[in-house]
Length: 120
Image (cartoon, rainbow, N blue to C red; front, side, top):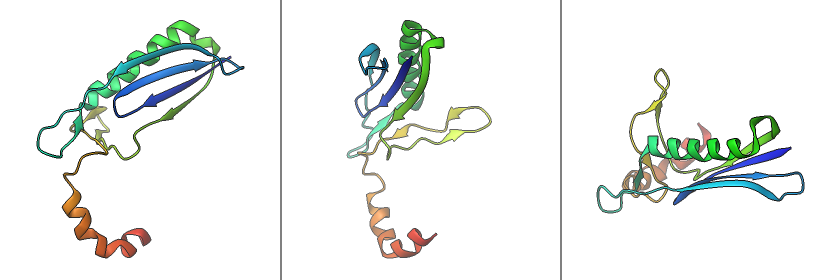
């Protein structure tokens, strides 16, 4: 059986397939470019992120065979945000990268309300 691990990182997305002895039996990786539309803004193309991840998945699944996959896990950038349209499955904008500073001032403004925000 094969365990799949999806790693959507800041600079690339990759999928690894591990056998029961934790040997890598298949892998695929694609570079994930970042875009800088303004100073201190960091974005990634949401559809490109999804498509590159899917390409890596398809590659590894094609190598190991779908019937051999036992389970799958994912790790990602955690603080990177994408808003998806539920009815269409398409993103409403770019992935706002965790490194982006566009909301820094607003975060400082909200800091005085952290107790209430945490409570809610």
